[in-house]
Amino acid sequence: MKHILLVIFLILHATYACFSQSDTIYTNTEKIICIVHEITIDSVKFTQLNEALITSIHKNTVQKIISRSGQIQMFSEPPTYNKVIGPDDWENVSMTRAASEVRNFRQVGTVNAEMEGSVSVNPAGALAGAILGSMGIAKKRLFRKLKMQCAMSGGNLIHTTQIDSTGGIYIVLANRTAAMNVSGISYTTMSLNAQEFRAKLKEKTTFTCIEKMEMSSNAFQFTKSQFDSIFKLNFVVFESDLLYANGTLNNVPITQFRVTGFTNEHFILMCKVKSTIYNYRIKF
Image (tube, rainbow, N blue to C red; front, side, top):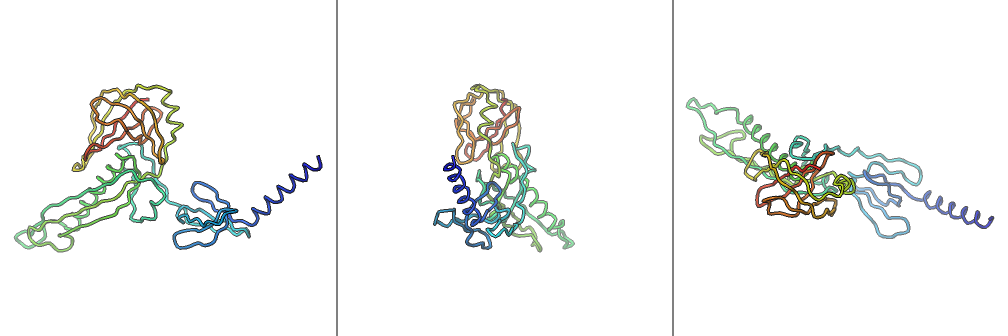
């Protein structure tokens, strides 16, 4: 008995000694016991205990670091993102120009919107309308389209990679064309719970589709229509933090759909055919 207690004491003592000589990194998702070597402008470099390989994580995922001396270093709170289940939640989509903000999120698609039109000068020489105001309205409409495209793809965050405008921003010549183009990449900050989704399916393989939503690359608004169809499920796959449902839907030439979100009553299936994104609302 004494021998066993001695062994337990030695193990606990060794464990305490090990942890007392280590640092602790608290990220948005986990706690890492390690040795911190360097904190740079955009990353934290460390080694795992009993390992020599230096690992680096992006600093925008770190909440705080407690050093082996007990000192606590706090980092800025990460931005919060709203939940998007389907296209009706498009106003919940956030936008960013910072590539560092999206590095740890899953890409789900690309977005693009462009608009052009002519502007002119009236006979009295005054500009026809407030040019800056017109460009602001155009930009707002383009961003609205991007958010809808993102929501249709199951994303809730857009990294805008290009914003171009030509003509008519400050001074316009008569009948000159003004154009604006905005493009970016859609990301999701959420990871769907595959186990919870399977539980809601209740081992059923046949489900009723009640609505179809679609948006072509040229459209500025997604459309809804009643879609009375049967979805026959083959299997569910969770891969690279994305949830997929393989099955058949009447008159749809796709069998692999991505699940973009679900509630207690329904789930959304997404697919893309050529330049059009489709969403199908399916009852559990």
